[in-house]
Image (cartoon, rainbow, N blue to C red; front, side, top):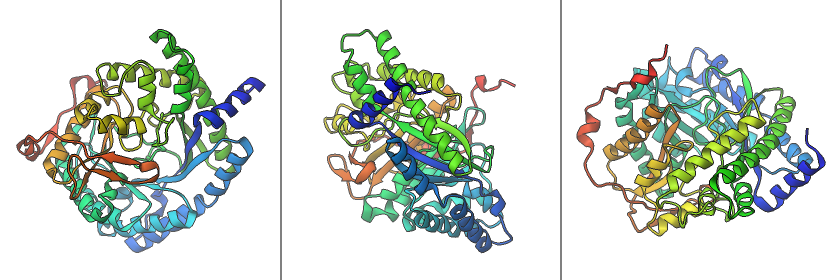
Length: 451
């Protein structure tokens, strides 16, 4: 239960420290939508999503008004579309467009689930589906796509890794008039989770129930403010402060999530307490790390500070709710974090350092703009490196890079809104093509054999 002090403290966090519910995401199973043809399936998908999520925006606005907590995004995730289009993969773009129509009809921000799970192998229908991603992202506005290419249990599907490098490049070219914006809606995963409420990687897993509400809470500003109050504390006390703060944030998220699920006639799924930054000053994960004592994020000590932050956030959230899930930790997207943007512009934050940081935090290389001339095989190699970190460490990792057509190191790109802006970051110029073109599968690590 919240006491008077808790309520007043929460109000202060909202008004001064950028606390918000970053997203309410309704997960919807599309398995009952499969029909005898692609056209019939697309229509059933549209009808189902519109019926199930027809009140999500209204309920979110009601809850925001009643509790005084901003709810920034209202979203939907669906069963991976490759599964429901297995019998007619040529119809997948039609289903994707039906989902986009539904998203517009509902007034939601994004809809995730134009996805495929190929971490161990890739059937013909799955390859056809993956090759449809660039066209779909170029011709829709609100649909997001993801592909899981590896796991700790199965290893890394290097044939899928090679293909995804090509898909990222093609997506950038098809949306070159928007500086490759389509790639901002495309995530390549290892160890993807079924209950992630954040875009662009959300999908509704086959292990989930029919309709679920997952909530993502974000409060980098709240954590930074708490640390500002203990400038001389040792790191033990700093970790305890972060843990207590994450506890409070998570309780607010669970309150909203349970009430939203009740009003939307859905099951309460999880609270994802990831610290998801924005380009707004005062809402930066990088600035939390600098508050801990770093001169600038990217310098030596950054990985250690991030490890402590991520662990403390998870511990605080688990204390507050028995239904913590999704990704839950600290996101480090470059274009969406004003501190990361500033460090990259100064030349103090590089992809190699970001890769090291992903070994200890949520997800991976996120919203990084790279030269448009970067070869597809180099992008595949970046994906493979990140997948290896996830596979060996038994954690979710991902890559969302944007090869910006016609731009190179020294240039920058402006995406606007929550997607922010990004300097074009250099990539290692060495040739990885021979390694990538070998194909096959990198076997799972020995410690995965736990049965």
